[in-house]
Amino acid sequence: MNRMSRPAIDPAIASGGAATRDGQPISYSRAPARDLAPWIARLYVTIVDAPEDYALSCGIFSDAAMLRIQLRGEWTAETAEGRREMGRAALYFGPQTRRMPITVKGSFTSVGLSFRPGACHALGKLKLDTMCDKLAPLETLGMCREEWMALFDESASAEDWCLAMEEAMRRLVRRSGAVEPDPVTVAVEAAAFTNPEITVARLAEQCGAEQRRLERLVRRDFGIPPKQVLRRARALDMASHLRGVADHNEAEALALRYYDQSHLIREFTALFGMSPRQFVDSPQPLMTLSLETRQARRLETTARIAPGDIKPWQ
Image (cartoon, rainbow, N blue to C red; front, side, top):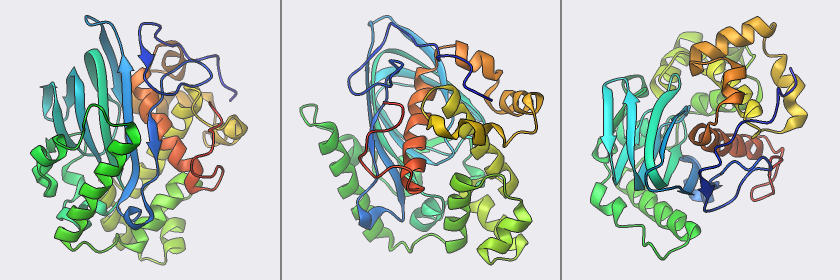
């Protein structure tokens, strides 16, 4: 399936950083320092300016557990445990199994990082099947809210903030004595980026693991069964394509992951709560920010682009 049309944008907001060719705000994001790569997938800084009375209704869909620090904006999230309202906050987000509705009022600044699968168990013995679609205090992972909120000097740059987060994470890794995530978990993460059409049986064989062990580890470290991990990965890649934050050279390959148009519509609607056409035709600034950060990591991880390169959608 070719890209339907240019994705709708919201002209009321402007990015304090970069933007896509279509004019959609994108975050400052990068890979972590090499010593933190076993535990951190990506660091990001999002700065979006909007009118004071502006209300944005959107959503996010992350396949990774996240540390999110909200420095500006009034936020509301519809979680598995009900509605959560917050202003300045530092929270642990479990991975999402489907789109999480989010609203935000006024300008907003969000800073944080995504964890590698298995990192939360390594650092804090968390099993992600108990955290999906939920928010929790930072103390859930052995972090201190006050320490993290104090990291972000308003006069500092986005890169300064990323460096401060890395130092805080190094302290956490040392305190926890964490070992690196299980190699099976690492292999499943790679498959979700490179070959999410693979069967679970073939994936277990490829990982050199008995299928029951694979399923147990994946539930613990991803929060959902392996089949759902792969299904989610396919949907997130397609959503990135539809929002214009994917490599357009992959468009045909992404479409061939679905049997036909009706299969795509069913799968997409089940996970995003709207059809692909609606997804393109409605402004999705928060969702696009989330998808773009993931897709940047995917292209770097699969060596389609080098870290720091200009991305295909810029």
